[in-house]
Length: 302
Image (cartoon, rainbow, N blue to C red; front, side, top):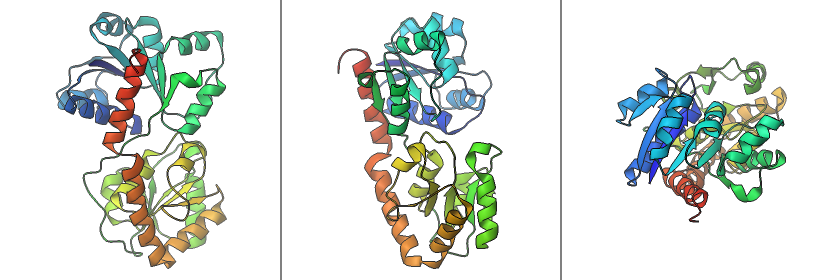
């Protein structure tokens, strides 16, 4: 199968990492992939570095190139708009965000044009249905995680790790307040793979979330996770078994942080069961199988 991928993101965030991971897995399985990305963006450079044919994501490129492919896979809202206007082949849309779909005449036309939707969680699938997308056109395909390293042996002396972010939806204010209350040192990271190697826990607080790829990474690397029970995050693990869910409340978060540090048995259990949970649902094989099945359905073969 020949697949044209389109992503217009300016940064290399979770979605862009998933695009690159998916393309590599598709190639490994014998499929041919090409990429249209924002020119000179990190994904554009990564695509070239991984030896994928890569060009600038423009409507003219979609119109000129899409006819050479079996299917087009768009990975963000702007790419979706491009494909709705310019794609000469059936296209599928990855939907990763938790916020509701805009309801307007233009949006309605745009959303009807897609052959299928790949929702990153059941929560996101439900938001698509609320916007009028038929359930039969939606597949839930979770993110995959593929960390090249594991954390060191768990040590309560290591700091807690949280994401560096100025996004008010990500709850850094709650984490800072919780850290003061609990007396737990928090390292705010812009490189999770580096910093999770020596972490007592990963604290991921969010007010809105499609899934939470950082949580998946921490679980695979072997770090206990504390996360908000919101959106698609609530689908990742079992509370108290493979992670700890909290309300978006500083007192509740602080209590969970102290609990992880004080109970070695619990922390080691969270690590073991977290890795098992990743193996159950969030591997590269799951991503590849779910995505190719969606392609087949979009092409009328499944």
